[in-house]
Length: 96
Image 1 (tube, one colour):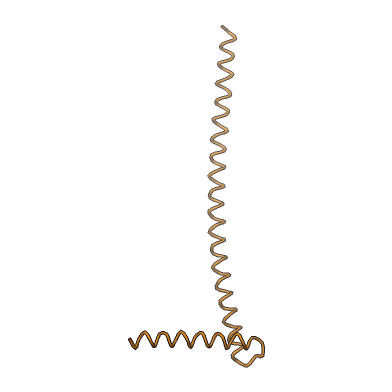
Image 2 (image 1 turned 60 degrees about the vertical axis):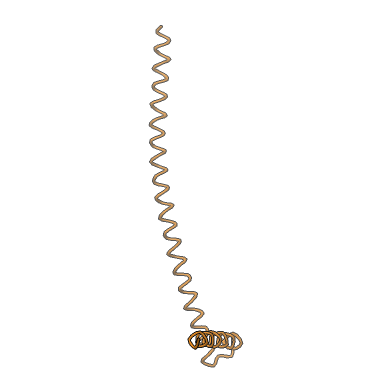
Protein backbone atom coordinates (compact mmCIF):
# COMPACT_ATOMS: atom_id res chain seq x y z
CA UNK A 1 0.00 0.00 0.00
CA UNK A 2 2.88 2.36 0.82
CA UNK A 3 4.35 1.69 -2.60
CA UNK A 4 1.10 2.72 -4.26
CA UNK A 5 1.10 6.02 -2.33
CA UNK A 6 4.66 6.70 -3.45
CA UNK A 7 3.76 5.98 -7.08
CA UNK A 8 0.74 8.29 -6.88
CA UNK A 9 2.85 11.04 -5.24
CA UNK A 10 5.51 10.59 -7.92
CA UNK A 11 2.90 10.85 -10.66
CA UNK A 12 1.37 13.96 -9.06
CA UNK A 13 4.82 15.52 -8.86
CA UNK A 14 5.56 14.73 -12.51
CA UNK A 15 2.17 16.05 -13.65
CA UNK A 16 2.74 19.23 -11.65
CA UNK A 17 6.16 19.69 -13.26
CA UNK A 18 4.70 19.08 -16.71
CA UNK A 19 1.92 21.61 -16.13
CA UNK A 20 4.47 24.17 -14.96
CA UNK A 21 6.61 23.49 -18.01
CA UNK A 22 3.52 23.82 -20.22
CA UNK A 23 2.79 27.23 -18.72
CA UNK A 24 6.39 28.37 -19.22
CA UNK A 25 6.28 27.21 -22.85
CA UNK A 26 2.96 29.00 -23.42
CA UNK A 27 4.49 32.23 -22.13
CA UNK A 28 7.56 31.77 -24.31
CA UNK A 29 5.31 31.08 -27.29
CA UNK A 30 3.34 34.26 -26.60
CA UNK A 31 6.55 36.31 -26.48
CA UNK A 32 7.75 34.76 -29.73
CA UNK A 33 4.42 35.55 -31.40
CA UNK A 34 4.72 39.18 -30.28
CA UNK A 35 8.29 39.35 -31.61
CA UNK A 36 7.18 37.83 -34.92
CA UNK A 37 4.38 40.36 -35.24
CA UNK A 38 6.80 43.21 -34.49
CA UNK A 39 9.27 41.84 -37.05
CA UNK A 40 6.54 41.59 -39.70
CA UNK A 41 5.48 45.16 -38.98
CA UNK A 42 9.09 46.34 -39.27
CA UNK A 43 9.51 44.41 -42.52
CA UNK A 44 6.35 46.01 -43.92
CA UNK A 45 7.61 49.49 -43.02
CA UNK A 46 11.02 48.77 -44.53
CA UNK A 47 9.36 47.49 -47.72
CA UNK A 48 7.27 50.66 -47.98
CA UNK A 49 10.39 52.80 -47.46
CA UNK A 50 12.25 50.80 -50.10
CA UNK A 51 9.45 51.29 -52.61
CA UNK A 52 9.36 55.03 -51.86
CA UNK A 53 13.13 55.32 -52.34
CA UNK A 54 12.99 53.33 -55.58
CA UNK A 55 10.28 55.66 -56.86
CA UNK A 56 12.35 58.70 -55.91
CA UNK A 57 15.41 57.18 -57.55
CA UNK A 58 13.50 56.50 -60.78
CA UNK A 59 12.11 60.05 -60.75
CA UNK A 60 15.57 61.53 -60.27
CA UNK A 61 16.99 59.30 -62.97
CA UNK A 62 14.24 60.41 -65.37
CA UNK A 63 14.75 64.08 -64.47
CA UNK A 64 18.49 63.74 -65.01
CA UNK A 65 17.86 62.16 -68.41
CA UNK A 66 15.48 64.94 -69.41
CA UNK A 67 17.98 67.58 -68.36
CA UNK A 68 20.30 66.45 -71.10
CA UNK A 69 22.18 63.52 -69.70
CA UNK A 70 23.32 61.18 -72.46
CA UNK A 71 22.58 58.07 -70.45
CA UNK A 72 19.09 56.59 -70.60
CA UNK A 73 17.83 58.81 -73.46
CA UNK A 74 15.95 55.88 -74.91
CA UNK A 75 14.28 55.26 -71.58
CA UNK A 76 13.23 58.91 -71.39
CA UNK A 77 11.78 58.80 -74.90
CA UNK A 78 9.83 55.65 -74.07
CA UNK A 79 8.50 57.23 -70.89
CA UNK A 80 7.45 60.37 -72.75
CA UNK A 81 5.72 58.27 -75.42
CA UNK A 82 3.88 56.33 -72.71
CA UNK A 83 2.76 59.54 -71.05
CA UNK A 84 1.56 60.94 -74.38
CA UNK A 85 -0.42 57.75 -75.07
CA UNK A 86 -2.00 57.97 -71.63
CA UNK A 87 -2.92 61.61 -72.22
CA UNK A 88 -4.41 60.77 -75.63
CA UNK A 89 -6.45 58.01 -74.02
CA UNK A 90 -7.74 60.40 -71.33
CA UNK A 91 -8.62 63.02 -73.93
CA UNK A 92 -10.46 60.42 -76.00
CA UNK A 93 -12.46 59.32 -72.96
CA UNK A 94 -13.35 62.91 -72.12
CA UNK A 95 -14.45 63.56 -75.69
CA UNK A 96 -16.96 60.69 -75.60
